[in-house]
Image (cartoon, rainbow over all chains, first blue to last red):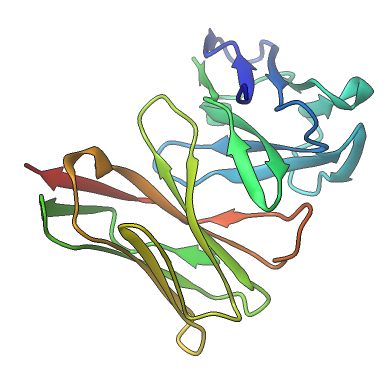
Length: 111
Length: 115
């Protein structure tokens, strides 16, 4: 069974630029999460999808972050405009039977 | 406000000995606890979990102990192997049934197993 795919793996941008991350969850997994992991911290939940609907986006900084999951499969997370403090690894996870499967993450560096 | 705390940023253990990683939580609503292992440049991978109705869960070399009254859990690895060297995250959720749930993670403990 293929795992959770994420791209790009690395991205370097300057502050105030825009960036987008893509996630392809494990086939058939209805629930999808995006996490932000800042260096030295644990992953922090940003948004939860169930199929193509948002279940919880209370921790998503909506002034600059947006996410969508069209057709209930792939998902994209966008930051516009980026700030220095957005430098982190962005992890996508999909869920089956109480277990969250994580992708390898996208490491974002904002200069 | 850190609801899940891993107070040891790092731990070094000799190969073959026991590794004990500790985790404390403050939210009484948490009733499902998990440990994840993370290698560099990879996403976290699930290791073992425990529901609040149990005080121990064992899977091969890995055992998780839960002390609800103390709001404390620990992960024991016996015997430790060099391949166990990784960052270990403790995570907790207020929901232990099948389906979606939200995890709160600790900051992680970096385990180094010395050959």
